[in-house]
Length: 257
Image 1 (cartoon, helix red, strand yellow):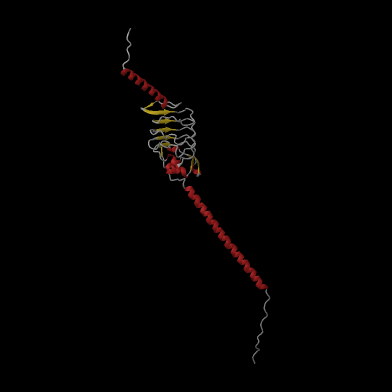
Image 2 (cartoon, rainbow, N blue to C red; image 1 turned 120 degrees about the vertical axis):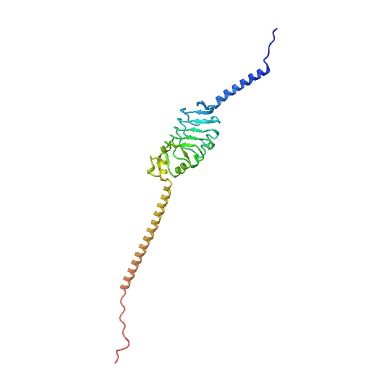
């Protein structure tokens, strides 16, 4: 009867460990790339490409060590608060060519320190809250959005590090001042124009209108008072004229001798 040769414990342990590592590697590959995106090697870092996938929202299973995330050319219309807050290593975020209509103060929470580029061009953004992007140190692309130009937008833009390659394509779709519509906004602001002077002008005009209103009321009162007094004086004079004249008094002392 032949003997059965058992595998050496050390070889069995190595084989088991190898299988486990391979299994963990496969599981990691499956977990790091959300469907239907693809995650090619990007200089040894995690890159997630979700372009042209028909996505209507931001995927929730994006790996935490992602450095490049492309969500461009989809149908994303809403960005929830904190959608990217777990992506502490993210350096580039492309959200261009979507249907995003608004961004909130906490939309990009957690990205202030590391993000280097944020592309929001070709969306439907009309207003930008002052605190929504002000804490980011990234270059920001905002071109080709139907922006409503007002003082709040001007104050928000002064806080941003706009991408110089696309800054001239930021234009006003609507504006509190008609002369801004359709023109490069940043160029106008750099030339000395201001969207924040409109409220002051409106206040000044209102004050002037109020002052002229009071002045007109005073003039009208004075005219009424004078006319009323003139009428009273005329009536009093006519009354005096209507009174019978008093007879001439006789001298009680006769003529002298």
